[in-house]
Image (cartoon, rainbow over all chains, first blue to last red; front, side, top):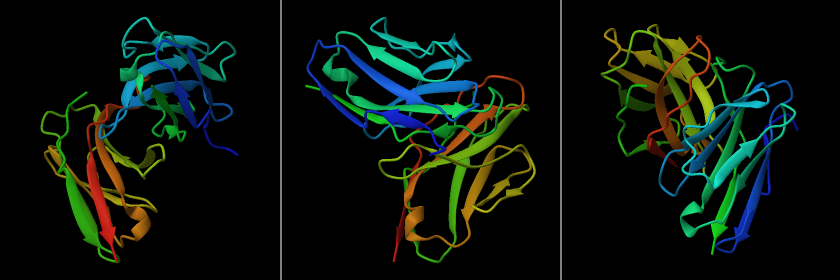
Length: 114
Length: 112
């Protein structure tokens, strides 16, 4: 598959637990973005990577959220001490370069905190 | 990035043209108008973008007013598979990093 792949597609976790969400971008895409989408809302920006570095993490809601992209390809979004309010669809997108016209989105991971 | 205003929902009969409006009265000279759509349970999908000239591709046409304060996305022959939320976004392009800022979009329902 040539698209952006996100795993798992669904994740149910208990309040207070730690979760990791994975994103495999399109091969060769240097820019990678994480978004969060709550029910009935548009996607909300979380963090942007250019290569291995987080160039803009201004959208992360608090220090429980962290993301890495150690080799400039796969990225992992990590959420510590999950809360019920973290329940949402987490979307990953990639683009060939930061200024590319088109960003390609994955299908998202639906996170439910119970 | 400038804010956009879109109707909450619209209906369209299958086979007819769907015209989705967007107001972006505070758009800056270096900001483009982008359209994405999101089909249920999928990630957003890029449709088209433009600066000031009208644009057309295999998916849609984009008409931008001369003052650039509003635009219309046109799906010339809507099908049931075009039922989705359509997002109008303004964004600086071709100048390095610029994120997409999504609003609530317009829910387009195409009916038989």
